[in-house]
Length: 231
Length: 359
Image 1 (cartoon, rainbow over the protein chains, first blue to last red):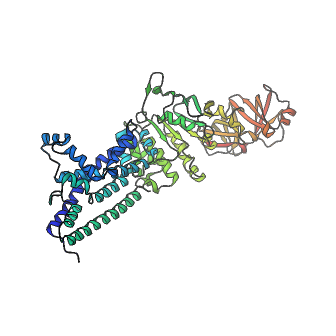
Image 2 (image 1 turned 120 degrees about the vertical axis):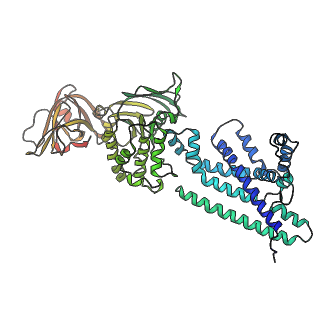
Image 3 (image 1 turned 90 degrees about the vertical axis):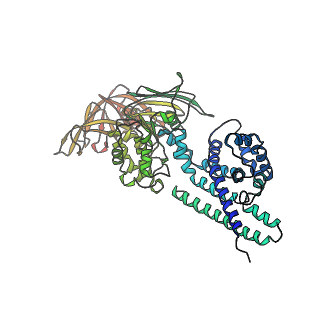
């Protein structure tokens, strides 16, 4: 019923997995840092930062893509600098697809990490203080290890979400086979071309399997890590 | 050397105004009802809470002084704190918990193996905190605080969350710790048993104020302090074993400037002991009785007589050459004996009523 995947289809799957890996790899450390600041540091404008972080969650993805385009485009303020200093161009590239995906999953990851940072018993950090641990020391030896289940779950959910990013990616990185055409974009392209329904169905099956596996994995690892912490 | 603590802090509706001096080394028990401000005082000494004004000096080192703008962060104070709920790090083994403070401290006199041995936790080193019993957790927490080489150890009701059996399991370790380590300790509790066994000095706090403070023997022997209101009020006496009379199966103890006879003890002469003489066991007499089983007839003077209206009883402070005894008698007995403050009295103490607490 469903035809086997062509080499082009496999290329789209491979590209999707790579884009998602880069989006999580570069986005997660930033998400952890932002989550820690939002959870632990009192500063004026915290509400504003929190709102900005959550914007991609509520904006139409096309708008997020457009904002990226005018910021990181060749004539955008940051895009021009990147081009001039490093010779890096993000628009219409695989790196650009990764950036767009990272921005889209950023609020989800920040939220998950922040919740697990806030769930940790503040008494443990107090104990660490009386034992001579300064702020950064406590972050790396107490807060982050205790938030590890939340961080890992954030990474897996973020990765699974990346596999389905569409609007921001197509707006910022376009739909170039082999470069920026991820699974959802390939499915869309297949549906646009006459007789592409079978291909769309096959790719959709792959997308469903990947998403489901991601959810199961997140659940399983989260439980294992919590058990290791005695929770 | 000593600890000098003074702090003022105002919460919504409650204000704290505490000042006391404590011996170093030695165990100072901060005693008082819940909500009196005991834990807040400890948090301020540790630096976890910043009071409106304070001055905290340990053996001459200033940790905080509002007057000169000194405020050391908790991580730079070298003040160990044992919490009521242990607060072991759940993601580390017992051994890593123990070494957490040690790795961050300058090398000091307290050795890993010695602490593990003292607290009897050698068998637990590879375990995770969640697999330990409450008593084991608390012992590890004490060890972790000690290994950070603190200049001062604070203990916030370390036994409060444990049942009686677990308390009895840990108390001997605390007594060993007190005699082994030359460390100033401030110990918060509202359990009289811990006061009697551990305290060298006591600070009584009520409603955010110090009611009384001083050496434990002075505090226990005063009729006007909250300790004397208890059913088990009594004098706490520092003694040394003066000698044994094996024929009569008695031991002579020297203390309060006199000697007491108690049933034969298994301690070498010269051993320092702590005994408790309950007020309700001390009989008062006007003249020396004859043909009576009581072994200890002590001559003293009435220092003070306080009425205990709720009990229809009187508490009499009897001054002996080296300290006071407390006696609880009926008002009628005081009247019949014609006891007056400053007058002579004989205190009769049954040998078997003297509680010997190891020192």
